[in-house]
Amino acid sequence: MVRKTGKKTGKVRNVETDKVKLTFQGILYKSALEVFCAQELVRNGLPVHYEEVSYTLQEGFTCPVVSWEAKEKKVKGEKVKTYLPVSGKVLPMKYTPDFTGPGWVVECKGMVTAEFSMRYKLLKAQLSQQKTPPTLFMPRNREQVSLTVQAIIQLTNNP
Image (cartoon, rainbow, N blue to C red; front, side):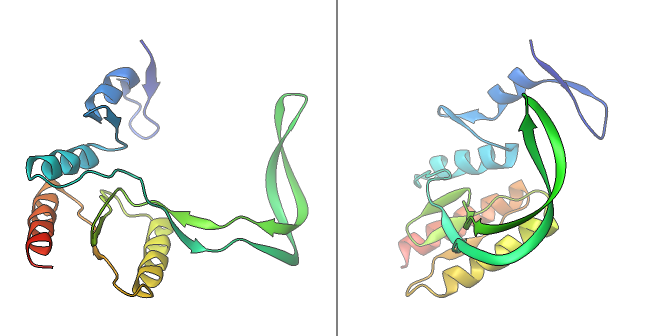
């Protein structure tokens, strides 16, 4: 039995049990809201494509600018924090929404962070450049998931 202490609450929880609760039709989801969304999609005969599509928000590039950054590197198996000048290749920034279907994208988000807000705006900008952009949904609770599924049904019935 694996136990993990919650950072903020100090509560001990059973990680293995949590995984069982977040599994639906053999897929391990990252939140209970995602599980509920998958269940609602299935219940209404809609496809469940979980984290199958990724969008590139910013292409990778080579950066000639020298930037001093904090990095962790392994020295003799130990993680050591360093502060070094770096330059060179910058990896692409990608975004993988929770669910995608023909003409729609769903991102279940209980708690919105500053990082997510920025990525979501970049996703909107990237999608808006498509010839036929999908309809984007961001339900934040079960009621909004139900409304999202009903809207998707309307979209698929009246393209």
